[in-house]
Image (tube, rainbow, N blue to C red):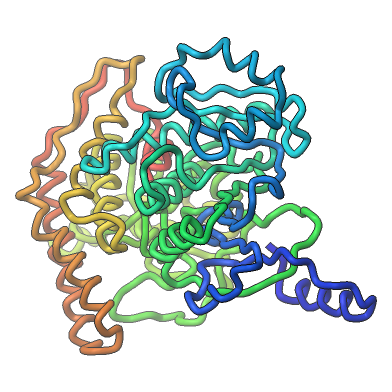
Length: 502
């Protein structure tokens, strides 16, 4: 996205040369509801800002005016029903496209096929997704995961074909936009986190042909990123968009996302004492260096991306939490959480493993000495831990109800272990009765904040700290007693597992 000074420069250029402003405008982040009076202008909303790698946009525009390298359309199996702009695409692409489509009449639900655009010159290729006539909104977590898999397939197909921009329709079938929009925006967030193809795209766009569809996506984007602001910029020539790692905004997100909270490691880690309140963001080059070295920040017990999982000299997994940062954001300080706990209890040994990252690389001892009783983590413990935390984060963000988030987490655990190359057992995820109170507490806290963000501020801080202590104690019991996956062919890399499940 262009910097503010670039916007000013473009405006000056228009004034000096007396050129009319482009009728197309873009809106970075979620739009203010009061801006709806500009209905005559196609608008573009950034669905998540840096959380979506600054690549995902929501546009109110017509199908005829849209152009990109690739466009996605949907139809039912057998192509008996075409949804959205399917029929218009078939007509504009000509008989060659229609004839090739006939070869895939027996394609089943969930498949995606890539075709040449033939006579349609607005696009280089067309991706057809085969979907059911309606999604089951009564089983949102399961059906949502299914829809996300459809979209991921389409994105992967386009990337493998060398496409740099792609357009999605606002809805896929007869299901309303207010169900599809949250699912699709979350899909993009997860895909940007997990896919190696994310840097292949300059732009992922959802084109809404009506105000109702557009409002649905604005609502979804706002809920996903409540702290975003609205600004207008003039449409300009295509240029590379800046890339920011999702892990350093909210680990997901979501995990999306789903990973909610927008707490970035560019913010000081939570706690009673904040030593450096005015710190600079972690530079992008440091983030890229960390990624190159296989280091990713994931969710802590406070649901903030301040945890680092690394191998020790024996190849075992150790977990470090960020305790401080330098003012310029170039130096990050970590301590082993388990060592901390043991050192407080053990009067004979105060050994605590400490780690420092400088400019995205380990500075000093790469394999610090741990407390004698400090046990390493298993891949399965880290996997279940992150799925549990990311599901609670969706509740904290208001994206899912508590039981929906729990069901979604169970589904993700099942998906994560569905590896044909290994004979593995599904890990024992905590029962709903074990996590119910903790999950509802996140929702209640969010509701209280919505009523009044300033009311009883000091009391809320104390409750947050108590909740953190309860969560830490509960997780210790959970990970000590749970039965985890056992594989017959070794474990996958922890960093890859955690990265793929956010």
